[in-house]
Length: 183
Image (cartoon, rainbow, N blue to C red; front, side, top):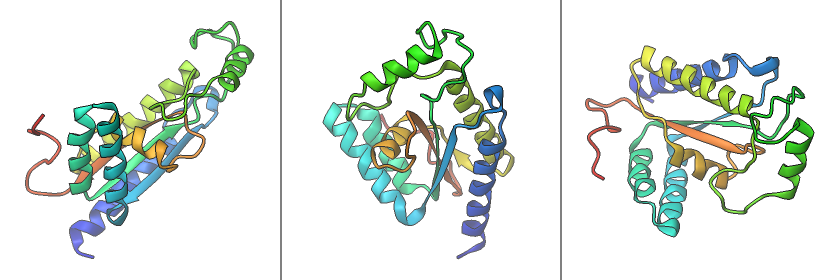
């Protein structure tokens, strides 16, 4: 392992740490992280490409190329169907119990995400993703938040129990591979 690879792996671990320690609503942690290392990136990229082809979504295929070329990818998911018991109705249901019941009745196999979700858990996911990319920036890792990588990671079972996930591939090259991309 060269110095850049060693630094990349340390920095991705620190990104996961930032996601883990990000503030959570009511102090209840439902965040799940998973680091996809270089050897496992082809499987994630293949999952992204397959979803894009199946659903005719071009950016999934484009993003798959980025993930395949990355040094690693941090997946951050949330168990968004866990309730907090505060009945805020942000999910669209009159109570947390009603949302939980709706979760049991729904479930579309193959859907990108599974809903409904607790709006506070969705905010927790956003804060965790923001904390992780802040750490990537501090350590000068090129990165990009990808909905497409999270969808594929969920379908591949990388974040068990998560209803929503995002991926953050990272790279250490002379030019940022995540921008100036072809469409």
